[in-house]
Length: 147
Ligand SMILES: [Zn+2]
Image (cartoon, rainbow, N blue to C red; front, side, top):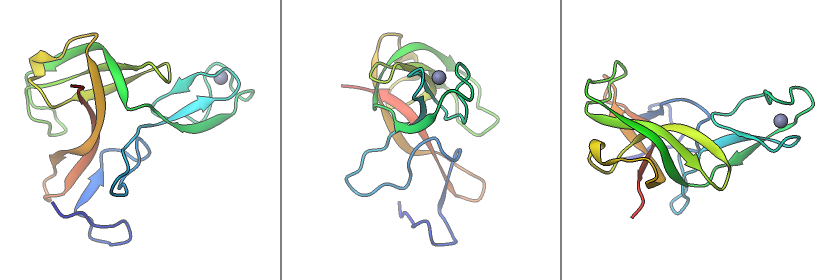
């Protein structure tokens, strides 16, 4: 698929939500989720938040890129199409990112939805998750089996 640059007005894609990850990427660049890291207590939050819920104004938040590898903490399979246009069956759940000590929520891809299990190693993918009614690709993040 053709990808247009940000300064063109007629984008053929849009993001599922702003600020979750970097997009578009340079050719050899790997995508990463963007998180907030509190310099005071060291906790990490995804999605990003302006204030640390533990330190409040004592904490100073910095943006960090999360490691791309995670381990499934919990997952489930949905057998109905989502109201936002994701076709069933699909799997989603929580993924622990050991390097950053943070748990993130996400969709799973790259395998039978029923095949995902807790403890499984997964890796981040940023790609089109659906096409909207105008034919525009919606770019989101998901996790695929690491193998
Ligand atoms: Zn904090």
